[in-house]
Image (tube, rainbow, N blue to C red; front, side, top):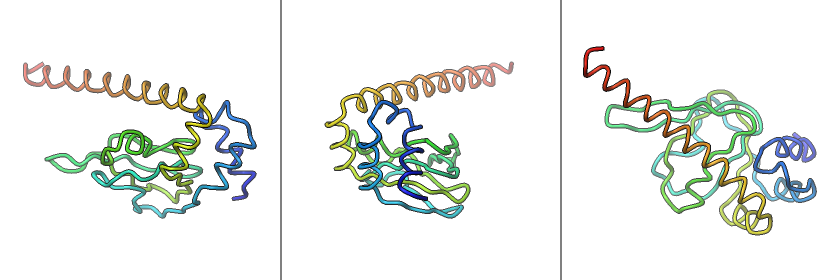
Length: 156
């Protein structure tokens, strides 16, 4: 994939939609290009978060370890971002990300990520919006799970 193609894909990610192409080109140029085969891990739950991954092609599963085993909680694909939570707030990875298909990603280190957010405040605002949307979805999912559990306990 050429640098020009990477820039075009990155421009489709909401996080970068309002950033000048020349600045996105710089981001793409400073990022590490990685290819994962099905079953390969991008990151593992509990590991330190040192980078975010921007999926350029392919699909991945989001897997959470629970006392009863691993649970797939989401699927990711082209234009999705993973790993930003761990690099934003210095917490261990909240999930394992496993390639479901051959997957190409740009790995952006914590230092580069923070430089970008500092230099381009609109990127920080968009990041907040994306994380807020995830929180709303997670809250909705938890509420539905709670209701299903209550129905099951009541025999309905």
